[in-house]
Length: 223
Image (cartoon, rainbow, N blue to C red):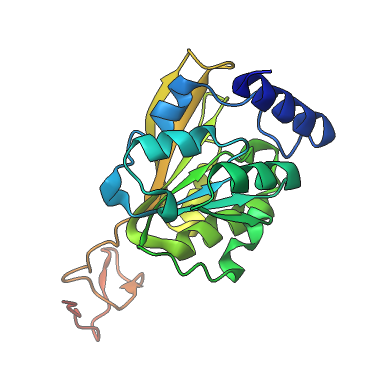
């Protein structure tokens, strides 16, 4: 049996045993792997992969120039984790739930520049999605990014949730060569808004016909 056939069988068995924890019946294809890693290079630094499965994205990350020793693979499934340890011995493979990521001290050899997620966020409870994102961004450097793919037409992280966490999602692209077709999003921190200049810190007076600051208030300036 070829390596691809072995991976497909392993993936299918994992999906049968836990369909809500495995994103697809089959491993991701080459087109999706290329799209997911399009923003990755040797300058990215350490890359964390959540739910790497059989290592399809992992191989693509290595082809982008990232050293294997700069990979941290977080996999919940025991079979997948064991296989990843054998295939990528220089990488650090951690068998754990991605929602616990914030509690782990990773001590990466280089700052974490990217997190690649193969997790099925649409089938995960909101509280776990929040824990996963908070954990990922607790390790990401300030300009780092979280990459997520989905089989749906919209970003799998709702706008209210992004607002709550101070994040923004940017559409990267789509591929119809993957089965099923997939869409990729880049999630990053929002830039802080500049301080307001010349805004009155006092409430508006509602006693007069015109909306003017109360007579006893003076404008306060910031910055």
